[in-house]
Length: 408
Image 1 (tube, helix red, strand yellow):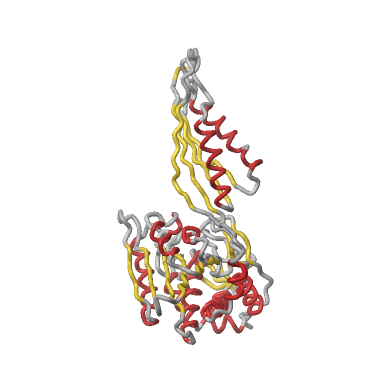
Image 2 (cartoon, one colour):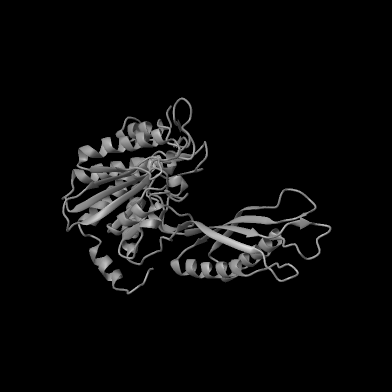
């Protein structure tokens, strides 16, 4: 006797599963340019019949696949709603069938199924369902990144500009583990730190040496004390190297990679002020007073997606829709990770992320989604877009937008 629910039986013969299967069979690991572009082709084929015009933007160095931007414009005066997701994955698809169904858990299991090919299916089906009864009063825009898993390198300025043109931004990263969605996200700054000292014989050195590792270690200790000043921020040394790998030598070179995470722009700016001051302060000198030399640069600078009071009615509506459809108690909450939507968030637009599939074990071979969520989340998103088009949220938005909150 089958333990599959009626929803799953319906899904197994549905457009949702067919679309997901096509996506999952494509090896779209970030560095597989041909596979990434093949996945983008699939999106064009799906959305072109729905009236979307597309533009492919190649990477400036050719290191990654094309950024895909699709637009369906009804009027220059209409508000613009943007859907954001990515086709690239960390791992390749499974050999043979790209995913499999576990009847006991109602989960579909496969690499990239949650992050974020399930989210792509949800977005595309929601768009199609919305357009079946749309009044053509909303401009739609779809942005599909080819390399989100490495920070959408080379495309962030374009994404930022597209965000400025958007009134609403819906992101299709997977939901939080309990099915909740994301109304704000941490930002991050990654610091690449290099210290140059002066090497010497460890036994015979008599003050002419400058130990780069000692200088860097003292700097790191001071940086980590900032956790007390900024308890909600995250500071992590992800890599630490120095010297030649031998004893009996004073370390002449040392380096570290510092990862910082923060909820708002104010914390980002204050953290940077303190970190820069620490890095610029000599900790170790030679006998003549010459200090170790420290240099740093920022490898990645992702702004936070701050919570904006005007987004609350939008998020509340979606949460209530999903509670009604799924009979699941979810919320909209803060997420400590960053995503492409962070770079597109501005004071004037409303952002909601985590609208993709409910799942877990991301970036693992046993990554999974709850199969029913493909249908329930696409249904909820379609209804939310209708509310936006019909102006159902306008009164609440106006009420909250008069709070005078400065967000950046």
